[in-house]
Amino acid sequence: MNNEYLQIQDEVRQALIEKKPVVALESTIISHGMPWPKNVETARSVEAEVRKHGAIPATIAIMNGKLKVGLSLDELEFFGKEKEVWKVSLRDMPYVVTKKSPGATTVASTMRIASMAGIRIFATGGTGGVHRGAAESFDISADLTEMANTNVAVVSAGVKSILDIGLTLEYLETLGIPVITFGQDEFPSFYSSKSGFKSPLRLDKTEEIAELLKAKWEMGLNGSVLIANPIPAEYAVDPIHIEGFIQNALSDAEKQGVSGKSVTPFLLKHIAENSDGESLDANIALIHSNARLAALIASNLY
Ligand code: PSU
Ligand code: MN
Image (cartoon, rainbow, N blue to C red; front, side, top):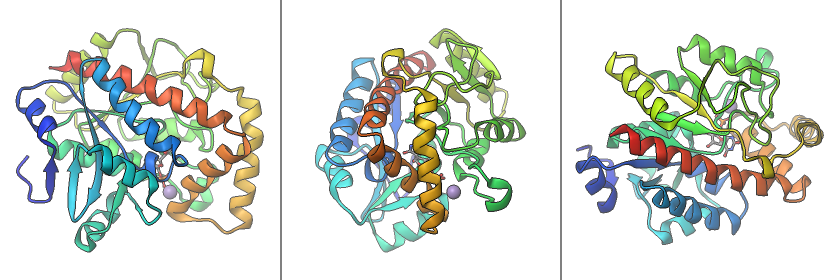
């Protein structure tokens, strides 16, 4: 906890000292994953959802050369509104810190900063993974390699079908990362509770998930656990309907030569705009549901 770059908000620090449940939240989803003003509204209501279920929220971002754990309402607003915010994955951390630029953290960098602070669980919408066509592009998110190393569990709504879900599950297996789906046999695909892939593991109770996390880390098995939480049924979007938007987004990305770290934000924005807000409503609903599940697991962890 005593890292000169780390700046932990008082409430979060106090909760960690008292071993109260804390849930980490990322900021790339705010700055690069959703349009203003819904991004800020969502960031705030997700924090409220964590509180409602007995845990302290800690949204993570980089500002003024500090790795900030816990943001004020004004800071949340800043990350939602400001245009010149870096999307910071692990490799970008030292640059953005030394330049003192504002940086929104991805799953990978949020996990690492959460771990520095002593937080064990993190809620997001969807994690990065192996992109479609990765055999040629080599585009595999650093979220996956980070999950192999860092002892922070991730609650997400599965893997978005902009990615290759089958290859992502294979890669998670290679890295030794347990993948648990909460309450069903099938691995979910973000907008839909279905993906066509069986989940490697299934657990139905938050206490069981907490028990598994404790056992994993106490055995010295480092790394994350991916906890896939299917989107609530009333918000699910038909995967065939979404696939049309994904195909359009992928072909536009190729035409415009979008590559590297811009690929994921480009696809997310394209799909949100073309689905006329339907995907955005689903996205907002599932983040709340993930925040709730993470808070309940966190309450069992201590
Ligand atoms: N997937 C989503 N929504 C998101 C992201 C991924 O459904 O907002 C964001 C997360 O911050 C994730 C990052 O860590 O994109 C992955 O980027 P890349 O694919 O460039 O590693
Ligand atoms: Mn990538």
